[in-house]
Amino acid sequence: MSRLKIFLIILTFTSVFAKKDVIFQCDEAMIYDENKNFCTISNFVAESDQTVHIVHNSNKNNVKYMKCYDSKARYIPYKLFENFPNLQSLDISNSYIEDISRNSFHSADNLLYLNMSLNRIKSLGPSAFKGAAKTLKIELAANEISEISPNAFNTLDDMDKLVLSRNLIRELDKSVFVENVNLNHIHLDNNLIEEINPDLFSYCKHLRIVDLSNNRLKKLQPNTFELNFVLEGLFLSGNLLETFNLTNLYSLNKLNLDNNRLTSLVLIAVKNVRANNNEIENITVRNFENFETMNLAHNHISNLTNITKLSNLVSLDLSSNKVGPVIGLSTFSNLRNLRELRLRNTSLSSITFGMFSKQTKLTTFDISFNGLRELNLDMLAPYMTTVKQFFIDGNSLTEIKGRTTFFQAFPYLYSIGLSKNKFNCTYLHHIITTPFLSPNVELYIEPIDSDIEKTHIRDITCEHEDQKDDYDDEILIPKKPMKVKMTKEKELSSQEREMFIAKIQGQQELLSSHLLWMKITLITIAVALICFVVFKSMDYKRRLWRSVPHQNHVGDSSIVFRSTTTVNTTGEA
Ligand SMILES: *[C@@H]1O[C@H](CO)[C@@H](O)[C@H](O)[C@H]1NC(C)=O
Ligand SMILES: *[C@@H]1O[C@H](CO)[C@@H](O)[C@H](O)[C@H]1NC(C)=O
Ligand SMILES: *[C@@H]1O[C@H](CO)[C@@H](O)[C@H](O)[C@H]1NC(C)=O
Ligand SMILES: *[C@@H]1O[C@H](CO)[C@@H](O)[C@H](O)[C@H]1NC(C)=O
Ligand SMILES: *[C@@H]1O[C@H](CO)[C@@H](O)[C@H](O)[C@H]1NC(C)=O
Ligand SMILES: *[C@@H]1O[C@H](CO)[C@@H](O)[C@H](O)[C@H]1NC(C)=O
Ligand SMILES: *[C@@H]1O[C@H](CO)[C@@H](O)[C@H](O)[C@H]1NC(C)=O
Image (cartoon, rainbow, N blue to C red; front, side, top):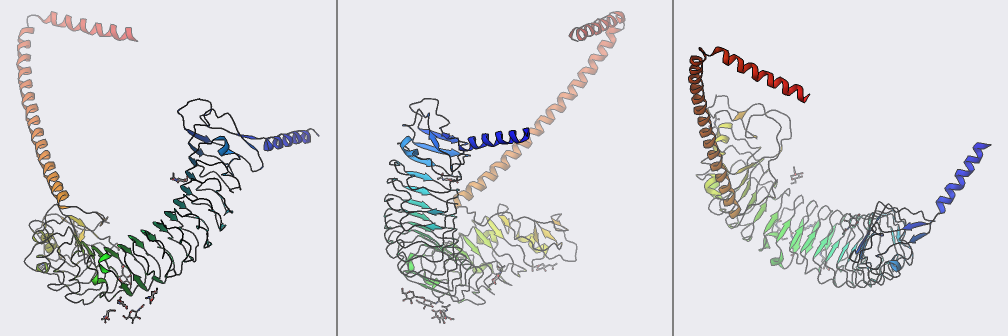
């Protein structure tokens, strides 16, 4: 019986607690401070059926910034904005918000920024933000939004940034952004969007950045973005696009189409294009002079006719396309502004005189993994004097032909890739040491893909000859697993290079001066030690001579000395 009673008491208590109203209070609430314009809320927990009272907030009229920490709010507390009428920034992210109820933003007259990311919102109803008329930025990333009412963003005339990344959005009504005429940035990445209505952004005349990466788009109608005259960045990587033919994009600075299924590409005028990892065969371009970078690695491009018309191209990556085995002598003759040319794994079988004679501004040149059997540096040396990074890894080279050394050909070189070729160890040693190569040049090394032990010098594998060689002990057998020494992205200007060399020289000078000092110190110590020993031995002899007639006195003093120490230690103990 008594057990039942206790149980009933506990039950009544818990139910009383469950229904008890909760108080919403700033952590700073009790300290009245005119200048305090922020409010943090910690550990606020409200169940959905509890009434929230916003009380005891002495500085509530001053609060402009509010942020919730470790809270489980479930919804935006009723009358929050009535209580904090001057709130400009509300971060109620990561707070278990499940729903935006109809009048949540009723009095949010001054709200400019709202962060509701990392919550559990599933849908956005009509005029969800009504009242927040001045709001500029709304973040709703990482919720579970799958439904968005066509009127959800009504009344948000000033909104310039909307973040809906990482939700479950499948479709967007074509009129959903009709009133958001000032929208500048929209992030819709990492959703499940399959289609974009061509009119979706027609009213957003100021749209500059659109992120639709990692969705399920199969195609875009040619007139999508037709009226977005200031569009600068369009991010479409990680979709299922098979064609891209937006003939009205004139202002685009950045276009990212990586990881789609494109077989052809139609580009009107884009400054920087990325379309790696597709199946692109044909590229149609207009306004050739508007293109600056083209990243087209891992595609099916074999005909370069259209690409080589882009005379202002600064960077071209055609890696892992079947460009070779032979390319015409004048293929690249129009690309005189190239700084970066990547032709890794492009099936090139040979390089001939004159092929790269117009690339006089090149700083990065990559012809690795092409099965090249021969390379004559005399073919590159007269033109490519500005090259800083040079990669010929993964070819079948046994020697570097011509009369030019790396040092002569590329005076500004700071990184070279020679790994995975067929150089014998004697020869490799020759070409990676002075005078062939400056000791300041970093050796880039391709990661090894097997555990088979191989001879190597400074981590570059080489063919080992039978004869005993005399290139000191730099060759190590067996091969230890190696790491890639540097990233390819690193670039050094000639000025930086000079500074780098100066720094190294400075360090060497510093080191030798340190060594000198160490030597001097050592000598000084040694001299001092010898003097000390000599002096001591003389002193000892003198004492010995003196002590003979005063033996007792010496003995006494030693006894006195010992007794005082004993007294001292016992006194302390
Ligand atoms: C919004 O909230 C999320 C989650 O707490 C956070 O990662 C993000 O940085 C916030 N945004 C800004 C601009 O502070
Ligand atoms: C691209 O679209 C235009 C019409 O906007 C059309 O005339 C052209 O044939 C299309 N090109 C390709 C390659 O699909
Ligand atoms: C590429 O263009 C050629 C003609 O230049 C045509 O035969 C071929 O079908 C086109 N391929 C694609 C994928 O459009
Ligand atoms: C080159 O561009 C033309 C249109 O100007 C197009 O028809 C052709 O397919 C393109 N060829 C390649 C190989 O990209
Ligand atoms: C390369 O493409 C151009 C333009 O599409 C075409 O005129 C030319 O015949 C093609 N070359 C080869 C070898 O297919
Ligand atoms: C080299 O390029 C071919 C296409 O020409 C591609 O199939 C292959 O995967 C590429 N290899 C590497 C290691 O990227
Ligand atoms: C090593 O390679 C160089 C260049 O190919 C060649 O001249 C030399 O004879 C080779 N040495 C041995 C011992 O095979």
